[in-house]
Amino acid sequence: MDLIRLAMRQYEALVPDSLRSEDQDELFQQLPESKIEAWFSDCVLPAIDELWQRPIFRNYATWPQRMLAPGAETETREMVERMDACLIEEAKVISQLGGNRQVADQLDRMLADAKDRETREPVEDGWMLGLPHKHVMIPYYRDQLESIATGCWTDLVCVDDYFGPAGGMMRCEPLPEGATEGAMVVSHQAHLRHVGDLISRCMLQRVRSWTGFLAEARAIYLEACRGAESQELAEVEAEQASWIKLQECWNRLLSICVVGAEARTREACMIAVQVVADFHPSPDLDWLGLDPHTIARFHGQLRATCVSRRDLSILDRIAAALNTLHNLYQGLDPTASAVDEAIASGGLVMIEKTRKVYWECEEIGQSWGIHRKPWELLLILAQRTRLGASVDQSDLYPEPVSDSTMQNRPRRLKELLPPTLARLIVPGHERVTYRLELSPDKVHLFD
Image (cartoon, rainbow, N blue to C red; front, side):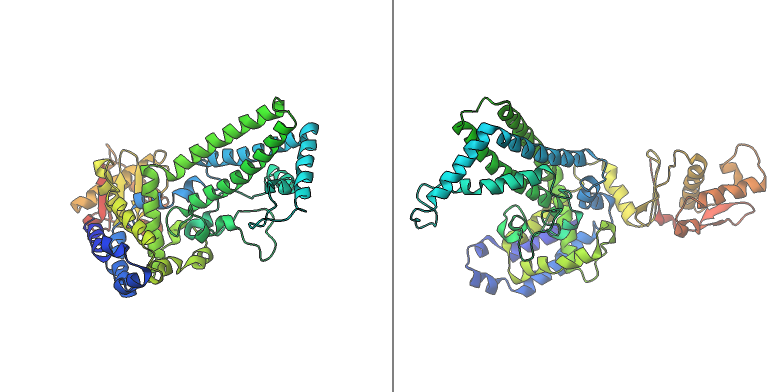
């Protein structure tokens, strides 16, 4: 963690407060590309490398793929699907308002009145004097409400958004050629950034965009209800209940994804991954489970933002992420850091209480509670390796057993292990004994 503290101190020296008050020309002169590049290569990358192999770091960094993606059996994914249903339901109940004859007639009158005003002399902003211009869009609202009511998106979540908004609005039908989805343009949307938990932020931006449209549409339709003196309609009560439900779901989803200490830690880990992806000469990103073509699509954008454009807001976020990473293990079980460091070393790690086994930084995902005898043998092999000794039958059986029985035990264990670990179980120096051909410092045992 000393490297993280060093990187934070170097950033304070690189970008002092006095530099923030300079104009862009002065900023470019006082903060040359070479200094930024050196900070990333000499300070940031070595600091992140301390955490790169650790399971806790990787779990945080892959949270959206594990918790939000289609098919994830999690409460968070269930909330996403609930949000999906709320958007569709709200579109349906607004449409049902327009299906009432009195309300439909009032919408038609509002549209006709708006079109009539278009013939008047325009004012400077291009609209007619006194024209409530959204009334002209009533046919558009009708069409779009019908589309949303059928669920016009494939999903609200796109895991390919990890490095940038690759999924757009996730429409079932693509936009016409040349059309741009302004809601997903990073430079136009304050909620989207070049770094952080972009999968969650893009998902929330889709919800924000659909909800924004529904808010406009419901305002027009409720105005029509008031004009038609139909505020007491059952459809109005249903719409209001639906809108409240949608808002509650939105607030819950927002609080889970981007609010709180857990969200800040996840975001810091994802920022670290995004930095490594752009600044490391040969980054190891296979564990993210993402399409390499999608990663390549956004490669270089973060570097250009930080180095070429000197975007201090993004550099500040990266520095803040380092500060969060420095506190990654605070509040956890005191052994968590030790376990994580052991796993990151790539050796054999066994945790007796939970019956978890790690090798080469990955968990060996066997049901060790079922395979009790193989677990027992692996544990004794690990214990004897720490002592530089072999395992004989007295370690496994209270009474003498045949040679074939002893030979079957390691054979069954090897079937459950990765080949690189299985081949390290070899005969001991004495007859019908076995040992783990592994250096004692590569074996880590935790209660």
